[in-house]
Length: 511
Image (cartoon, one colour):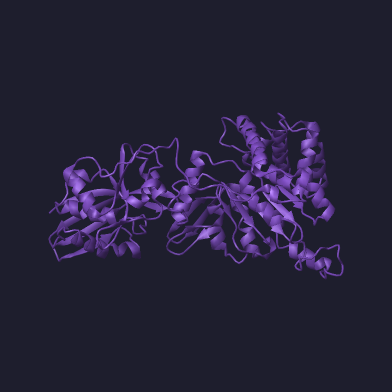
């Protein structure tokens, strides 16, 4: 009897940290003891591992077994350590060569019959293991496509414990070696079956949607029901370009941890669209949980769109909790066991009715809301939150004549998406050599030094700043939107017209 070591990965949010699994089989009262801050699911691994080994026809050591998970100060959660624990015990018992299991990473949940079951968070776990050189990762066959997305990693998918042990004994090629191909990842996530051409009668809102997609800006739409606010928001993802590979891996890792990744979609290549119900709690929006912290809607919408329909119906503290992620692009959830940080770089789209009864205000017979009631209703959206919105659009009801006249100007999502892609290419060329890729990401310092428009173009903005109609944060957002309008127009720098359009969209004036 001896000590054997192998490796696994513990997830902290969407970050994988290496865990060394040691097993000691020695003298003492027969039993298995797990140390190293295991949670309840991990403590139950002793029964799963024992049954899996016995049913795979390998002897269970009739001795005292101690399994240590290092570092001991790092909380270990989940059932993904089952395979590493079983292999470490088999190595200590001499069933498999101890030197063969020291370097590979083992991830997977064991069934009682020895089958390997898929687990959540394989992609971020393999990314964490990839920080080491010449890495081999053994994972369940059902997680093979997801793990193969990580470059420079040898992925070994196995179906059951017996297949893995026989391979370790022989020392030959793995059962089904996978070669990652990051240049052409496979994705079955297709574009939504909606089109911007479905929205008729709202030319200003469609233009605002195009600017929002081109620059990654936030949008607020105000208007009575039936005017197309939800239709517009649902069609925003159709205007966005496909995710770049590094962004796609980020989005896929978050959905893998959350358990929302479809089994037939190894890579999410389209920007996500998340629309929580107005009864959602702060933990559901921001992220949280008890022993296991899960990403919230803001993280699930990372690199995509977070749409909050009927925004004033959300609790005010839930809406105000969006302020910090909107500025920093990440959210930190603190619990007694520690803090977990999730990425949260998303485009926020708010939709609101002008009053609780949601009737047109120009129809006095229908709308009975007083000005105080309307003000209190929209007052649920706090000033600091509204100040973080780049564009504000009033969506009014259209007459039959306006609908008929607008049909000839409606464009499909494909046509608008081409302009959006070209505008993003101009922005990317201008921002080359910086960590930013869209105008919405440019910080205030760089915005007023390297990317400041001319004094002539800034006149309408500075006038509103002097009059108090515009805050310093609002000025930054107007300049960012002006850059996006200039990119869509094919200009090298925003002029007076682009800045005026951006200011009108920020102030909510339909131009």
